[in-house]
Image (tube, rainbow, N blue to C red; front, side, top):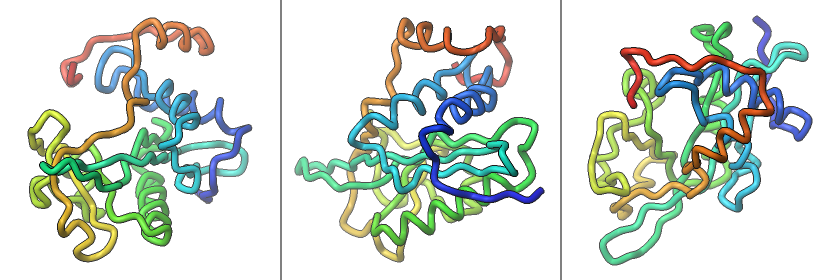
Length: 202
């Protein structure tokens, strides 16, 4: 495959949302809301336009990675800006071909060049540790509800960039979706049946 990467443009939006829906459908729960989050995230101040990349082959979009500004708040209520990565999607028919790795490496390097300190994610440790992500507990960073999970990880964008930064991680409110909001948004897409599977998280 001859895959190229570029910044997302407005005329890509619908295709990216469709691709994201295909990638996440029934993955973590029956149906998904990640395509709605992608739709909403572009409209909020936390959105980092310079880190919104698509992977494409000719005129076909096969992947997208998107970032938003988030914060770590310490016990003294001091805030530190970090990046939150996601949703991050590759079209199911094109997964396991290295497209995700290309998008990750490209966007991490760009984030470094833009001067950001760190990226914090919820994701599969077996996958993300390959790119330098480590359990956020190593940096004394917890979830907003005060826990540490294997899936909760951080990446320093340069050596020691998280020194002096600790506390609870808060992503933008845009990641919260309402049932009615999702049902309305779903009307823009072809009907797709939802399924319950043994591997879903909720």
